[in-house]
Image (tube, rainbow, N blue to C red; front, side):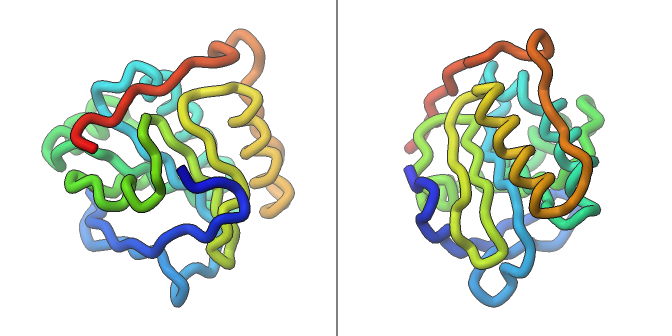
Length: 165
């Protein structure tokens, strides 16, 4: 798995809301939190609400969250409709992008600087690690700090193995 200090690979993926989103050397002019997830991942279920809060807190301030689903587009569309999440969802059904990042389980988070350098990387859910990512996003954007409080989520929950790798 890529780690802090590594350069994030370029990619282009379909977005559920339409069109394509690309990440690469030419268009990396904003920080982004990339969140790989799978619908059958119980640990991901813990994360969606927090990702949506991240998106609301930091997205308009300049640090977006792009959730990258590893499931079929129709299943991802049903998930968005049922859950009401507002973060953008990209589709990596072929698993090419998650392979490029070297993740083997979901959720997998990569906080990427404007220049494409990975600032933080984490698989599974760890409350302290997510709060550290929020702290950095707050520093980068000047937006108020978002923190997941003790009792809102478990301290640690291992991720789920990505099927098909």
